[in-house]
Length: 111
Image 1 (cartoon, rainbow, N blue to C red):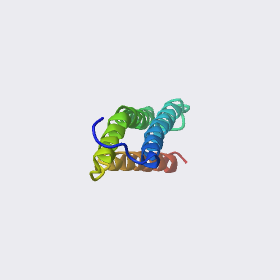
Image 2: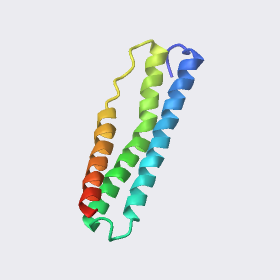
Image 3: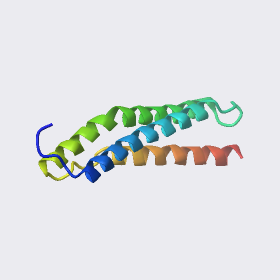
């Protein structure tokens, strides 16, 4: 990469953030698989499938976009430029919130 070598602390913080995106991806995927594996009598099948698909899709996005995000931040650090905005944060925040709200409604309905 062009530019100056940034402070190692910033590079390592960027790397930890990259690894956190991957950990988040694994957690979202595990949540999707867990919801898909719920017994049929707990939720209606279409709702289980929908929740699982949303979680696994978010997991795929987190994993696929973690490295490009790492590179963007590393490039900005090397060039002493402002960091790029976290454009995907709303997608993940609202996506997980949507899954939680739908699961909450399904839990209340099935109780």
